[in-house]
Image (cartoon, rainbow, N blue to C red; front, side, top):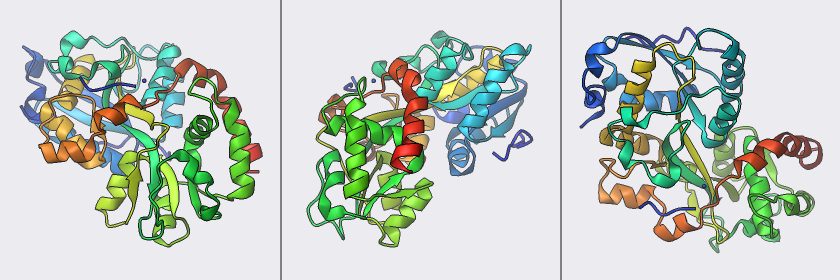
Length: 351
């Protein structure tokens, strides 16, 4: 196997009702049929390393497949996938996407319908996460994050971000602006299909709370670490990751309910190595593969049989009551409005 970075560029509510190295061999005749390059399109950096260490390395070590990486920001990768619809073949075989990105790519006729009969562990996928156009791997939610050393009363709601006590000490991660629009909508009486109340609420935050904006997750973490901020809203997995790395950050599940996020893998309609692509999906969904991904990313996994201990499950997964309150994106609504939301965020909230 080779790790070839030759393609590297600058770059919905619910209750959840053999090792990765063996996953590619679970379907009759699959292992012997595999060969050639398998081009995996993914985010770079630690996320790519997590997937490689979790299941890619063991699953494709000695089965005739050369693992090739296409690493770039999702915006660049989506642009290329759209451009390649006119070509006889796609330059990638599997692509990592968020749930919203996958919806967008499917809406643009990029992704093939998943043949779940080819996946030996498909029946363990949580039904409410299953999609016809991509295979979910992990999920979490946007929650409230805070420093327990500086916040005396633990927050309980997204509305705590508007608490005058935190004036100048609220941190927001610029790239997930849409999640702050959703959170503000929930606080102000809207919902995931009506965010109109959010805009006045966010302008109130801008004027009265004066939040600090950060360009990356790492920069937000640094804001907590150096004492610039006390509270934020971000993905649940980030709270667990930063806490594990020694940053005193705690997670508070908001009374309004968390905003769900999921990530998974799609197969372009013109993938060159479809057999290897399905072997990749099979390896990812294996009990050990899923457990390793959860341990690396601190997200909950989309299957029910991951080989996690009970202690690990309790740490990584939402409770049933929390799952009941998860808010899932209205994809059609978001797709219709996201450009306008981004324009408003840049011109009005940031301006």
